[in-house]
Structure formats: structure tokens, C-alpha cells
Image (cartoon, rainbow, N blue to C red; front, side, top):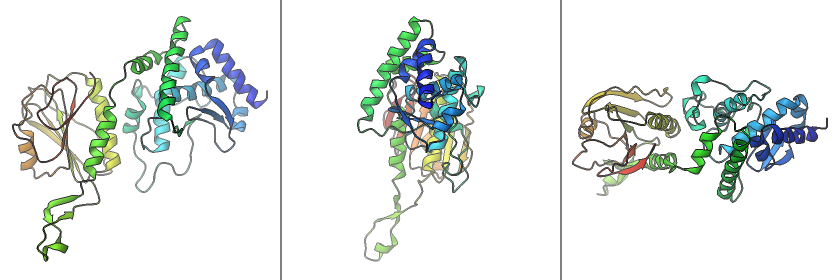
Length: 367
């Protein structure tokens, strides 16, 4: 079978047997690319290495095409957000391959399957991965992206393309459901598209990255200008200064899934901005426990508590411990007693309810 005909036949079989994948596969333009190892897609092309396609059975080819479709339908072409390319591909594979297997399709390598990661997004899985050794980017050496690679969408109007794909995904899901052939795991994807949430991840990252640029301090004068009678700030560090995170462990907290998602995103942010030290403070009506992480440490949260909710002790604790945070991130439901005075460092409240804090920035998740 001629190489291009094998892919065309695979798409035709999907239209008949798995119409969700088949309908969406027809939206991608086929492109021969001998420089890639397997397949890749960026939301516009379905590119392939002819030698790799030749090595596949028709059933495996159908599985790989479906794999690439899920990368696009899940928005992986638009969501990498500066993350390491190879690790992002691996995380995305773990997020989508169980859907392929559940649909009883075949992947040439068996797919990336880990029951402990079921139901997690690519962002959550990425945050759980071990970073590459210091001095390596994760893109070095073997560039094996499994049976298919997802690449960033580089179209000038990428936002429009993403929106068009979201509409196409909803339509394809409706057609598949009408035939009783909607794959497991797709309904939740469609619901997320229909009821989009505020991109709290982007807001949180922007907040932390802004704080990371606060690399001058007035606490120590710049010695170059002291002799001239000028009191100017000195450069504190090329790294981000310490960051503090308050974790509300009161018994009133809800939306465990939302907070788990937030924890994964914060772990990813810590890895990216690499503050000098990260203080994670757990408490309810009082201090319960604290963890400290330095760059390169494995990030594991260890919440303890379960009583009422009172945030008023947090600034005092931070001051008593001699912590000078570049910022404070508070993860809470917001149902408690707040500090009476605004602190001198930036604060962002990551809320799981509609409560409004008296100061600082606020983002909502899980509501």
C-alpha cells in the first residue's frame, strides 16, 4: 500500500468506525516530513515520516492518527506556555493515550499508560515529572516523542484557529454521541469547552513572574552611591527572592480536585522561576506545619490541620521567621478571619469560593 494511501485509508476507517476521530482527522492537511521521527501535528498539519508509516499496520496507523487528533482537540498545540518541549509531549501523551486504549484502538508502542495519572491534565502530569539533571534542558539527546509529537501552533491567528477547533470538537462529539460512539473521556473535554473557566494558571504565572523581576531592594543601599549622599536600591539577587505559600488546611475547604490542580501548577511554577527558597505554610486557626524547598528539590506538599479558619496570624509568622518574601500565594476557600493590615509584599489569593479578600489580587478556581 502506498504510504499516503495508508494514512488516507486510516482516516476513512476512522470516519466509519470512530467518527469523532475521523471527522476531526479530515481537518488536518497531510504533509510528508522525512526529518521527523514519527508523526507531528500543530493544529494545521498532520505530518508524517514515510518510513515510520511503512512500519505500521493499518490498525496502528489509525491509532497514531487518533493520538495526534487528541493532541489538537485537547489544545496541546496552544497550551505549552514555555514548558520544556519533550517533557510537555510526554505529559500530553500520558493524558491522551488512555482514551485511545479505552476506545480499543492500537498504538505501536502500547501507549503511555499510568493508572495513577488517569484523569489528570497535561499540566498536572508535567508538574509531577522529575525535571532533567541540572545543566540539561530536557530537549537534549534522544528526541523520541513516542508515536507522535505535538508542536506549538505558530499561525499568526492562533487564537482563531484554537476557537475553530473547539467548535469542531463539540460538533464531532455530538455526531459521535448520536451514533453511540463517543469515546470515554471526551464528554468531559466537551463540557470544559462549553463552559470555559478563567485562565487562572496564566494569571498566577503572570503574578509570580512579575514578582520575580523585583530584584532590587531598599533594605540595603547601593554602595556605589552612598558616598555621594544618594540612597538608591541595590540589586538583591539574580534569582527570584524567597516565595511564601499559605495552604489553608481548615476543615471547611471544598473542591479538593481544584486545589490538587492548583498544587500541580504551583509546583510547576516553582520549578520554572526557581526562587532562592520556597516556604509552604500550612494552617487553620493557627500554624500547623511548614515545608521549605530550594531549587532542585522535589516538590511534595504535606498539608496538616483540619480546624477552623483564621488568616490573621500569617503576616506575624512570616515576620517572626525572618522571611522576606517576594510574594505570598494564599490557597484557601476564603471563609475566615483576615489580617487587619495590608502587608508590604504582593499577595495573591487563590480562592475556591466567591469570597473577596480585603487586599491583594484574587483568582478563582473550581467554581
